[in-house]
Amino acid sequence: MADTALMSIPGQIDPVTVPRDITPREDGRVDLIGLPKKRIAELFESAGLDAKAAKLRAKQVFHWLYHRGVTDFEAMTDIAKTMRPWLAERFVIGRPEIVLAQHSSDGTRKWLLKTADDHEFEMVFIPDADRGTLCVSSQVGCTLNCRFCHTGTMRLVRNLTPGEIVGQVMLARDALGEWPKGSMAGLDEDEDEGGYSFDGRLLTNIVMMGMGEPLYNFDNVRDALKLVMDGDGLALSKRRITLSTSGVVPMMAKCGEEIGVNLAVSLHAVSKDVRDEIVPINRKYGLEELLQACADYPGASNARRITFEYVMLKDKNDSDEHARELVRLIKHYKLPAKVNLIPFNPWPGALYECSTPERIRRFSEIVFDAGISAPVRTPRGRDIDAACGQLKTAAKKMSRAELDRLAEEKQAALG
Ligand code: SAH
Ligand code: SF4
Image 1 (spheres, rainbow, N blue to C red):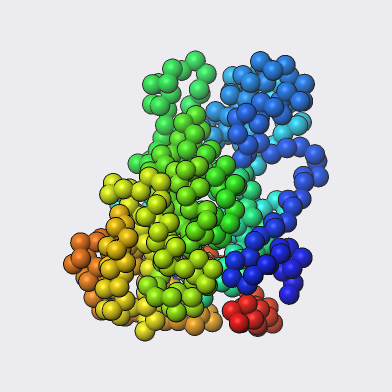
Image 2 (cartoon, helix red, strand yellow):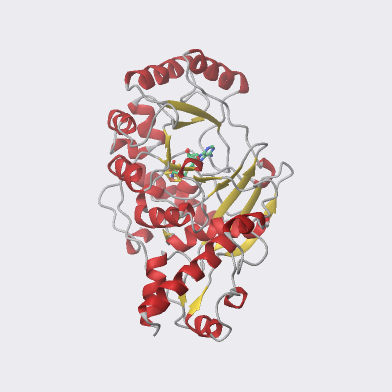
């Protein structure tokens, strides 16, 4: 299989990814995006500044990068004019490249992005009345093969770097015009805040629900989210960030402890046989283990519930019995939970159909009647094929031969 050059696959179900190295920049400059303040100071120091100056410059540069969103050292007005070319010779302020930007009639926006070494991935923005949610990718492709997921049909190319992950948030702020305006120099914090132009705070929430399994790229996702949460940086509260996992049980407690964001779990089934089929990582980490890890998730409470994602697949996981079993499991493990019912978003070649609206409504009622919130997520951006987790390049249509090859690979992997 072509993938073996990119990653080792000790078992079919739980491949451990060995990400391909990132191609270094040809010009030798270092991209500052994705680096913590301390690392920026170290780089400044090894480039010749004394320790104190390096620390001060790092603080200033960090603020311009993450608080102001500047992409040019020349815009850093409180840094000496002579210092700016010094920075520009050694460092860059990267953003993922936009290959394609789409705007749905319902306000949903989707971007096809490209890494510096030419790998495409996607990001989606979903505006609602009271919030704006950015759906962020963690990997190019995915090693897991959830059967209803389009990303699952792609090979894992590589993990995204912290810079490429936080870069999505920055790019969204660029596109939405959400960076504070005006000059920072000489303003105190209050005045500074007044310079914000949030347009009603478009981007308020982040979900790690784009391409990839975030807990298989833990360190980079953690480092990126730390930058997103940094009060001197993008300053988004951990309460407004949700990480979605297909159920990488051994990483869940670490996620709560080291990142502390809200947890969503792609449950999708309540019995071993169905979950084994549609979410194959279940063959490695079963339902009991998964639900116990949810019960133990640091920080989960009635105020901060765990979200169970449940994709509605016709005649597969959508019966009254399934709904009742879902309720039983949530109660049995005493989980502070809410359920998100997601109408299946079909894609060419998918093996499943979406449940009927009546079936979904009934399923939702049963769960609601047991006192557990179970809203049906309205499909968004259907005209631009934008459902999170179903992120697929519309621009680069796969050849028939490639699709056939992937179907074969998938079949082989599933046994
Ligand atoms: N890998 C992580 C996060 C990305 S997937 C995970 O699996 O949780 C984000 C969500 O989109 C998951 O709940 C996934 O099951 C769901 N999803 C994937 N394909 C879908 C489709 N075709 N229709 C509806 N939801 C889908
Ligand atoms: Fe990967 Fe999540 Fe899709 Fe499963 S649902 S294949 S884990 S992206």
